[in-house]
Image (cartoon, rainbow, N blue to C red; front, top):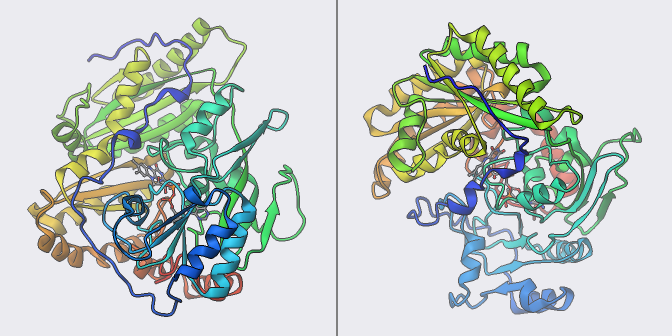
Length: 520
Ligand SMILES: Cc1cc2nc3c(=O)[nH]c(=O)nc-3n(C[C@H](O)[C@H](O)[C@H](O)COP(=O)(O)OP(=O)(O)OC[C@H]3O[C@@H](n4cnc5c(N)ncnc54)[C@H](O)[C@@H]3O)c2cc1C
C-alpha cells in the first residue's frame, strides 16, 4: 500500500489546467455531414447582410459572411463545425453582436424575414446543438464578454453571457469566490452556453445546478422582446420564474445575454485522493461512506472503470498512480471552509478527514493515494478529466451521458459491451455522486465510417429505450441537441412533451430558434 499522508498547502480550486485549450477533435476527420434542408425558411440575401452591417457596432468584426460561397472565409468554418467534428453546417453568415440591444435587433429582423438562427457560445457542446444543420445564421455571443461586477454582500456575479467560464473563475478569485459550475471545457465554454445547457460537471454535487444558483437573467425572445430579469434579488416571488425556461433550453426559445449568478466561497483548503476497487458494490460503499462521513466537506466524487483507465494510458501522457490492474477507480475531493484556520491547521483538518474516511473504507478499497501537493492533485484529476481525450484519440466515438439508478451502472455497461462486441472499446466514467455516467465507445481509427454507422444502428434507439426501462435520463447534463432529438420523446411523457411544444409555439411561433434541436 502506498497510502500517503497529505501535506497540502492552502490551495484554491482554480489551478486546474483547461482541457479544452489543449484538446479538441478538430483534427479528426468528420464523421457525419448534415444538411437538413430547412426549406421552410427564407434564403439569406445581400440586403439581409447589409441590414446587419447597418445595425451592428464595428461591422468589420461583427459580420462574418460568405454569401457567394467562395469559401474565402475560413473563419466561418469554425462557426459551422462542432467540437466533436461530427457536424458541418452550411451557414453563410455569423453575427457577433456586442449588446443585448443588438441581439434584439438581429432577432427581430430574422423573425420578420423568417431566417433561422443558431445561438452559439463557446461551441464546446457535445450533442450537435451549437452549429447550423443547414444554412442557419450563427449568432455568436463571443463579443459579449464583459463581466459586469460582483456584489460581495450577496455573493452575486453579474456578467454578459459570452464570458468564458475560466475568465469568470479567474475574476472571482480576487474576492475569494468561484462560479458554482466547473467543467473540463472551462477554457472555451461560455457562461451563457453553460446556462443554455444547464451544464453540470464536477461541482454540482456540492453546489447544485445552475437552476438553483441563477438568480437573474436577461433573455431576448425571437421577436426581439427583451426580458430583463437582472435585479438579482435573492427573494422574488412575483409570478412565474421565467428565467428557468431559458436555463437548459439549448437556444430554442431565445438568446441569453446576461446573467446574475450566486457564487460560493472558494474553500480555505482542499485535497484529493484516488482509490482503487475491485467491484462495483465497493464503489457504492465508498460513495455512501464518503457522503456519510465527509458530509459537507465532500466537494467531488467521481469514478472511472478499467477500460477508461487503459484508454487514458494508451492515448495520453497521463499515468494513474495506482496502476492498471483494478476494475474501478474513484476520485474523492475534500474541502475545508473555515477561513479562520491557518494553512497548517487546514492541512491537518483535511488530513484527518481523509484518514477518518480511510478507516471506514480500509477493508473495501484495494489501494489509495492522497495528493501531496498541487501537481499531484492535478495529476489525479487528469486521470479522470482526460479520459474523454483518450477515447477520441482511439477513434470514432459513441458518446453518451446518462442518469441512471446507480446499481444499474455495471449491468448497463455490460449490455452495451455485449452489443458492440470486439468492434469497440467501451468505458464508463463520470459524476457518480449525481448518478451521472458517461459511456464512451470507440472503434479503432477514423476511416471505417461504414462500421460506425452499422454499430450506430445497433445501438440507437436501443440504448435510449434501455435508459427508459431503467427510469433514467438520456441526458444527465449535455442536453439533447440534434443528436438525441429523435429520441427525446422516448424519455418524457406525452403530456410533458406537449406542454413543452406549446411553450415553444408561444415564444417562437415562426420556429426560427435553433431548428431541429431538442425537438426533431
Ligand atoms: C472536454 C469537455 C468536457 C465537458 N464536460 C462537461 C461536463 O462536465 N458537464 C457538462 O454539463 N458539459 C460538459 N461538456 C459539454 C459543454 O462544454 C457544455 O454543454 C457547455 O455548457 C457548453 O457551453 P458552450 O458555451 O460551449 O455552448 P455551445 O456549445 O456554444 O452551445 C450549447 C447549446 O447552448 C446554446 N447556447 C449557447 N449559448 C447560448 C446563449 N447565450 N443563449 C441561448 N442559447 C445558447 C446553443 O445554441 C447550443 O444549443 C464538456 C465538453 C467538453 C469539450
